[in-house]
Length: 371
Ligand SMILES: Cc1ncc(COP(=O)(O)O)c(C=O)c1O
Image 1 (cartoon, rainbow, N blue to C red):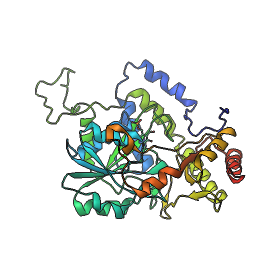
Image 2 (image 1 turned 45 degrees about the vertical axis):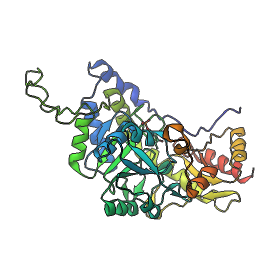
Image 3 (image 1 turned 30 degrees about the vertical axis):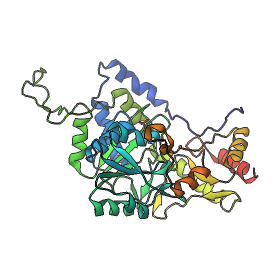
Image 4 (image 1 turned 45 degrees about the horizontal axis):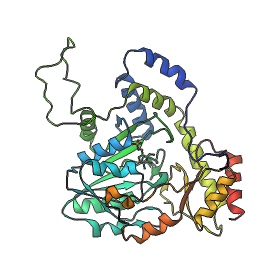
C-alpha cells in the first residue's frame, strides 16, 4: 500500500499543550475541576451559546441527550442509518430502537419531508447527524418535531465551526452534541459537550454526567459528605477530566484558524471539482456554512477513484457505513432509496487544517485527471 502523505484525519496538538499540561498533572486534581469549568466557559463563548456541559465523549453526550429527551426502553428514535456508530449506539444503550429514515441523496442527511411516515406512538426523538460538518435542514426538521411534540437532538460532532444563519449549530434543537474526539477540529483526546435550548437541561446534564449528584450541596463546608444529601434521579458516569479539558482549552486558542482553513479548503474544492465528470458535489445550504470536517462528495466507480487517490498518497474513505446492516441493529438493509444511492457513492477527501494550497491543488488535480 502506498505511503499516505496527505491523511484524511490528523490530530491537532499545539506546542502550548505541553506547558499547559504540566501544572495540571502536578496539581493533584485530575478528575473534573477548574479546567473543566474553564473549558465549558471558553467553548460556550466561542460557539456563541449561553452554556455548555463538558462530557467524556460524544456517545456519552448523545446518550445523555436522548435520555433527557425522554427516550426510555422500548421507545423509538428516528435517525438515518448513515452515521457514525457513536451516533447510533446511544439509542441501543438506552434499550430503545432506531427507526431508519431516508435521506436526501444530495446531502446525505435526513430529509425533513420523509420523516412523517416514520413517526409512531413510541417516537420520542429525531436524531440528526450533520454529515461531515455539512448543515442538515435543521429548521424544517424542527418544525416536524414540534408538530408531533417530540424532541430534536443534533449530532454536531463533525460540525465544529459550522453555522446556520450566522450562528454555530445548537440554536434550533432541544439538544446539540459536539465531539472533541482525537480527530475532530479541536480535540481533548476524547471529549464532548452538550448544549441545550433550555438552560435547565444543561444544569441537569451536569448532574446526570456524574451519578445524578448535585455537587453544590454534596459536601459540607468542612469537606465531609453531607448526610442529608439526596440523589433524586440516578445518573450516568460521563465526565470530562482535567487533562482532556486542558487539551481542549489549548485547542480552542487555535479554533478560528482551524475552522477558517477547513472552510477555505472546502470552498476551493467546490470550485475546483465543479462540473467534473463522474463527480457529484453535495448540495450545501446557502444560509449555512459547512464545518468541512472532511470534504464529502459522490463519485462514480468509487472504488477505482479511491485506489487512485491512495496510490498518490492521499487519504480517502467512505465516511461511515450504514448501521442498519449491523446485526446488533437487526442486520437488514432497509428499503431507503436515498440511503442506497448515497451509500454507493460517498467518499471523503482531506479538507482539514493540515491541507494547504499545495495539497488541495494536488488532490483536485489527481481527481481531475480521471480514474
Ligand atoms: C458522527 C460522530 N458522532 C460522534 C463521534 C465521536 O464519538 P465519541 O466521542 O463517543 O468517540 C464521531 C467520531 O468520530 C462521529 O463521527
